[in-house]
Image (cartoon, rainbow, N blue to C red; front, side, top):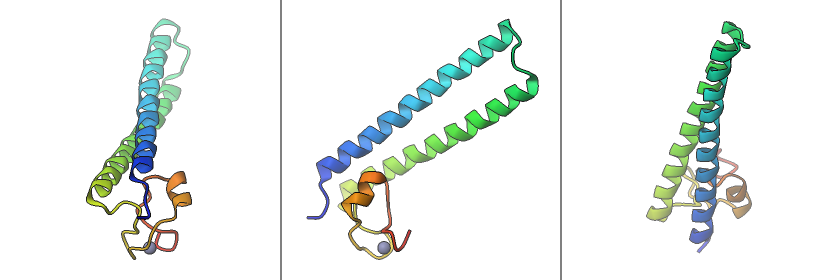
Length: 109
Ligand SMILES: [Zn+2]
């Protein structure tokens, strides 16, 4: 038994909580910027467009991470978690600690 399932679950849930918190925070700061713009007109239109594009890109990245987390949970349930999707080798715990959603070993990544 290579993988500590409970530990993996905790790591994945911690990741998910963090990303969801970031998402919520981004949503709140977006509203704040909108309010600022309405009341003070502090940001130029270009700045606002740029900030919005950046915020959207970050949100897409977060949504992508949430999908990776969901897939990792499925591998966990299927008993495939912690094994490389390419070569079936055990993924070292040190790697999973850094990236709990890692699907491949260092050699196949
Ligand atoms: Zn591999």
